[in-house]
Image: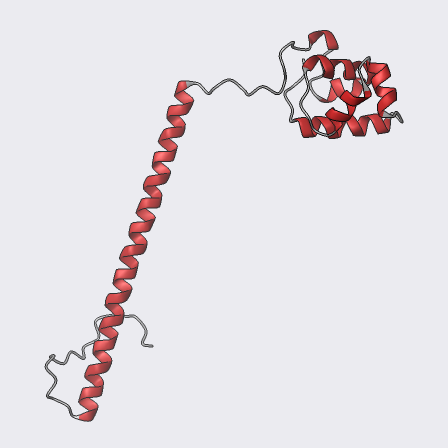
Length: 159
């Protein structure tokens, strides 16, 4: 049975295998029983049916071995490029839970950043007040309306 594969990958693979077999698109088309235009479309990454891929696999047996190893008779009749069936309900619920956890984590990180910014502003204000108090002491300005607070309350290095 052939495995689902992207049209671009299939086209590139068919081209490489055809050139390795030293065949032209016309040669491969004759051997597969399809038109050279179909070979061109496939090599350019356009979609095709399993029936066409099976015809090419008869002319290029390596193609069948690369994408599933089955014989042409085992090829599915439905198109290989159709989307996969939807995920099971449990898988979707598990994915939704993971997304919710991620959103919560991002929210927590944002809150942590906001708290850090608040603390940084608070420490900057404290540093500014300490500098003002030291300057007032050095100048002898005791007329300031704010009380002088020159006690360091943090281990944060001075700027």
